[in-house]
Length: 387
Image (cartoon, rainbow, N blue to C red; front, top):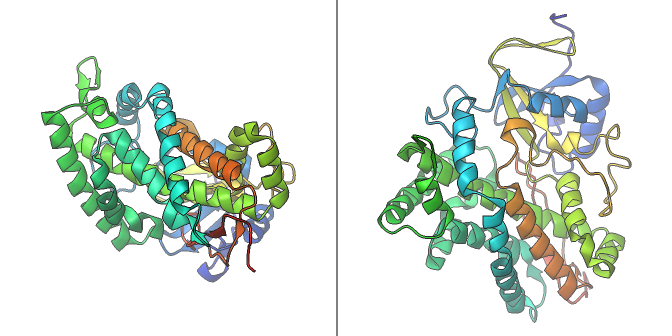
């Protein structure tokens, strides 16, 4: 039955959406109601979903859209069908698993070089020296950008990790767009064996990607490829260093790295939540979501739901199955998931193999925004810790 019910509204100060430690608050809200109204700094008042089964259902519900009414009219990967279907098909022809796997050996060499540079140092911030530069180097290589462009790409995009502050989004968008426009022009003049050249050449019958669509995709690939993977690597390393038994297990059984990465994705998702906008009035378990209202799917909440995951607050790198929602679900499942997984497997697996006694070398702080990641990650690779 569609009808209004009494739903609690949680003020911003009590909302766990972007808290440094959101999990106790999310657990309380999960018990309170299927959805609650919460105040956010970046979307105003929204519906918040913390249950796994409901989150998975709504992520696949085509009565909701990923796009705000004021978003660019250019079709992109967050569009609705039929534009979404056409673009995903074209991107899928270029962004293949084989293309990602061909980079694995190159990524291994890059990781080895980065770790060589810091191996003899004292305590080092692994975010700044490892988790930041690695994904930037990889996405630049994949897009066919010059090695000398990496510092420029980082400068243009680093505010992505500041979250959903409007001025940050606009600045990152404008600065990244300038770079992508120039890169597309260069690849049109001189195509290569890279993702941007493949996107320019991708065809599906008479359908190709338009210039505005190529620009939007390039921006999305850099933004998603950088921010989410930086957080995945940083969060994964932090999870191991704060769970020494799991670190020892991974060192003893390095073949657990694939399973470990899936657990890092579940345990500390790189995005804390994703918004879905109702295209019509929708009845969600007796609660009416009006057309235009936002439903915020909490990945942190869903991935710690005890109804789906046994001992959800425990890091378990042997967890199987592990159907986390860190890469979303449904038609908007992350295209870059294979790339993020591969980078994390190589980066964290190599770090553990080379520095099995690494310890935290100082306090860490979590970003309090939609991006679930650390502000710093001081580590003593030789294991002296906080002495």
